[in-house]
Image (cartoon, rainbow, N blue to C red; front, top):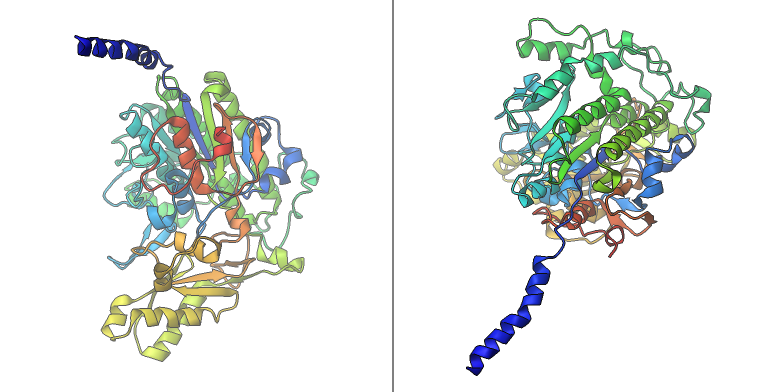
Length: 569
């Protein structure tokens, strides 16, 4: 009897705790997450053009959101594919496998592109543009994990003018990923996602917005004399558009887009098109209007898919890439780059206004970052007596090949020089009974003899050791044994690879120097308190921070840590 009373008493005492759990507040999440990645956005762009930004774009994020002022990439090479993959997987190329935009496939002996997939077909565009998927990405993304956590009820959509800027953030389980095909001026996808474009996307493409944007010249948003943060309009280190005599405003886009490149004609013919378009619609990528077109499509996706309005947390992965095309062509100190960011600021204001009106800013969680930064144009630095230079990758490859032939006899010793890495011919080395490690070290010694090269390491040495900081840590984090090269090369600060060497115009990126690794990391909206931090953080910390906010699992390869300050811990 006493035993029964004790059990009854224990059960009674447990009831309040059970009732409390049963009546606990439901799990709260934002209605919509919007991830924004700005291609080639250096950290200092937040402040360089501050006086000319409006109140609804970058200033809104900094004025109401939380900014990490000391956020960096922690690997090399700093390129678009690895950058997008690292943001969304929360780890580095050493884990997710995206070591560059291109690399040599040792199994086939041919080069591959980061999102290339010949097992899928184009939907809405040419085969060359549409045979794309995330098959090379070896880890899940935060967008994948959101889909898994909601039993695939959350919607995930990626949008970018570049295929890799849409596909990698959207992940493997996305409802859709859309990118731009300059051959027909349309946003397209592949059969990896769906068999045909949604009706809303077809209707959008039928409006020919790319052509309409190219119907107007590209002139400066403000009077050109006000662009005091930039160099003069006509300098030797900027590249003109094809068909332009000089790289100066106004850029006559109607005339420049009238000439169709042979590559586009060939793509259309290969796709079975009887008549090629009469304009070069791919030109829009290298203008600020490529960003505007991207946002137009993203806003249509938000409306048509009712994202954030279905009772589940949805995720829009939105990347702006015209900043990268403009930066490569004109350099970071150009009026063109400044004008592109002033116009992007207006596009961001348009996006935030839409989110506020449709969902309310307290129901939307936004983050903004970049996939990498950019170096100053070497000739710009040299003109101001600053250390800089450029190297020719093809010249380095051919010179190395010539020397290895002289030392070891005939044969194609160098298969490729890609991502600042040398790929040696391993079957030939084995055939000649040479030791691979010794060949790697010999090659590294030769590479250190080139002007501008400060270090070169054998891949075997990278695999045998572990570094917590410094240049060797960057190399280790960017190294994936099955895809990376045999020798890893590091250039001096201010030096970059110029594929038109000895001519060096515009700029590029890819190094572990601060101008390439230092990028914005901003959060705004749902439960984000205003503030900033100078604490050192890694780009790989974004995904686990989102996972904590959403109360879901981190991506399976995640090596980053949640950002405690913005989370309020």
